[in-house]
Image 1 (cartoon, helix red, strand yellow):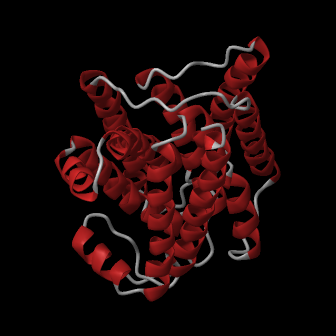
Image 2 (cartoon, one colour):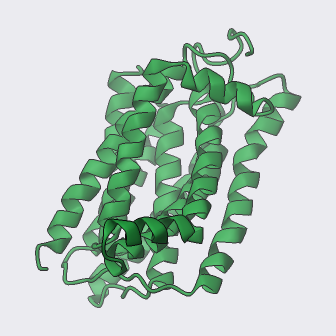
Length: 309
């Protein structure tokens, strides 16, 4: 089982690479679709499903989520989540090369600091004799997930209300990132809760029955579905190089903290690594506060010139 952490790191890298490439492909496809108006959800879904480029990106995201379910079944949160968050670096490169996005000076330093925070978190998780936790108290899980989902939905929806009042004025994407990050963090908790079925049940029929009857499946579907729709509005209206890193880091920090506690996984025993863990969390939070104070920048070709669906 000593190869577990290394296999977990490899599969987590595949998960984050697939997921984030999918996001970039979705962002590029959304530039050619009607405005994502979440007051007309069914029409938005129809528009998305009619776009082959968007479906390609969505398919890669699903592959990434599937890999995340598998890796969380045998590797601990403290090892997996920093690797998942490392996809921030890939997003920055692809958003520049594929989407042609540019960041202002302060924004660039903030995003670089977020990437550094992710590296620090990853360093705090090295050493790899940790084992994955699967036992979780359902009441504690609900107490952690329910308020987080409500707060995430409220924060992510706030740019929609502001844009409606100001005739779709540009938004920075930080609120979208924070809100969807919390929702995706909840989804990751549900995935982790559901992943225990893969280790405790044996046989395809038993695993399928366990998954279908698990409340975590439906919690994951609800949080992921709402976050995905909000994320489409965010990707279309804002720069991916802002929205995706903020969402990824917020979701990762929340999942790392809540998941370590809920699944009874040990904090780093080494004082130096524990200090790195705390420093990474603090830096990530401070950067998001600073980034949220930056003025919004219009995204070329995103909203005003589009025709509503």
